[in-house]
Image (tube, rainbow, N blue to C red; front, side, top):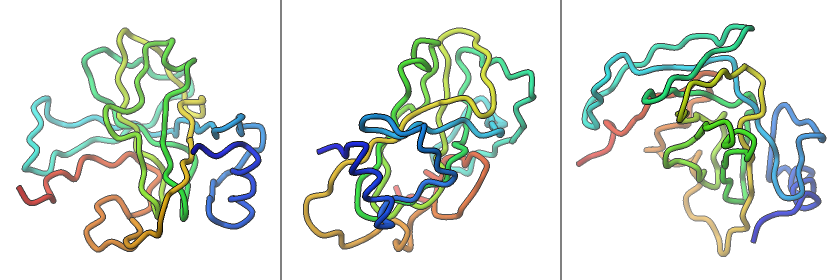
Length: 178
């Protein structure tokens, strides 16, 4: 079950959902709009290796915007810091973003109960498109969890994305054992 706008507000009042900054106008019927932060990142190598720490370079989106190029992976970040203590958050693209040919996540749209951070975006474009810091980029949808949670994400010792950040975070796949 997806939370409605009224339920999202109730869960915010209870402290089960935290969105900072929160703007009531960004609340949809059953979602909350999030915005693109001012930092993007690119990997320093065109060939990535899942078993090694692939380095990234951060850069700030100029006021005049930045043109995304096809066949390039950009890491972005949401302006909004969120905490979700009792629901499963999903980050989806907005239809307006998709209609510009922008994808905001390749595979990682689902968060875990206990996730407390900004969201790193895996941004790609089908054709050149200019983007701007602060533009609406996606929407959070909250699902009800059935049953008790044993391991909250922010309490797991092996959680790789727990450090609060305002910049995009590179893949930490290299920390996995395989």
